[in-house]
Length: 306
Image (cartoon, rainbow, N blue to C red; front, side, top):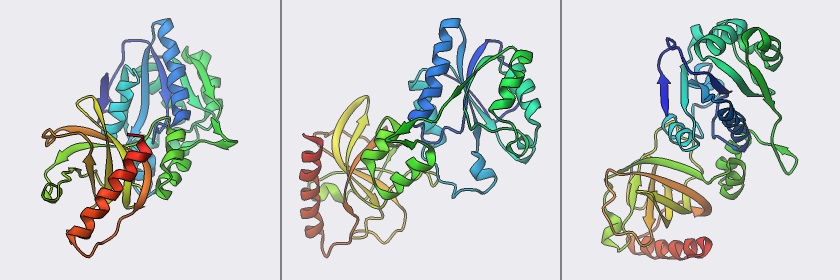
């Protein structure tokens, strides 16, 4: 996958099928957009995703800065979904102030060589977000592209959105979040060295420190599946500060894997959170913590049917 980032100076020679969106979370509504541009391959169009980096919520201060999917996670997911080109268009006050017509003519039609554009019916772009689906359709003939507008996807009569996914993550409702996303909520990262306490009590763990921008569910223990080197392992994951053994306030993601005995340090992994088990808590002793960890592991195995 070709990635164009940190520049507004680019020009695609290949004709493209473009999906426009924020793509926070890449939920099943976003996947509809990607399916639409994927169909463009039958017309020998390269599939292209256009999104802003940083997100509008960060630039304009309309959110808390936390993302369902980090920049690196988006790259991994888009490549896995077969996207040919990813454009992470720099968003600042200057680039956000271009007229909607300029955005369509210069960026979509000229620079991106778009022949098919897929977007949600609520798409907005250009100065003050005044560009919309109606404008795309009105300029389609002039700019020689086709427009595919996607209705909101619903689950149980509820419109799927990044806001809805975010709410479920914040509640720790991982099964519903998985339905909305079309995949388990995943934390990707590089395995870091921990304090190795788990080894001393017979339950070694691997540790990931997610970026501050990553939205995490409530501190607690989760049944999880972790992917390492293309293989998946069941396990139990603790999200939090480990108050029994540490006074640090840094939130980490610590996973005890079942049936994994190799050295994972330095490897890039994916931790898929499937079920909330219990809140994080402080125990009176290491022995009490060890006993609870064993109980958590057995409960996770039963939930994962291992």
